[in-house]
Length: 126
Image (cartoon, rainbow, N blue to C red):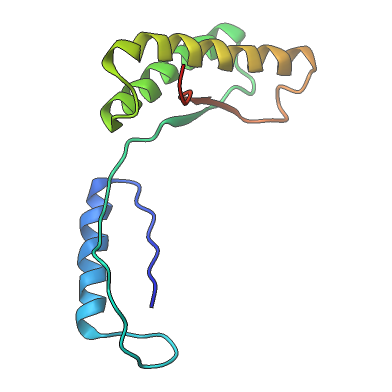
């Protein structure tokens, strides 16, 4: 039996661990009863490093402000996840903001601003 769980928060991680251990102790199996090797269970909670910005019907200035704030949130999350070095935090904010605003400007220039979602995400590396 294989159990795949995607966790969105540490609170869910504790509940998922308890439920998994309960299932394993009862010995539930799907289909046929057979002995299986159970590997160790590791649960890692991570902060989200992607945010979607609502922009339909909003002014350009409001979208820019939201993008800058979202860039700060996702870069701080990457820092807390250990995906980013502390000295790269401001670089991450600047790059994420610039990249997202370039995408937004291209969408506006093509009159596609309402067609595609606008996401702010952390860049993988320099």
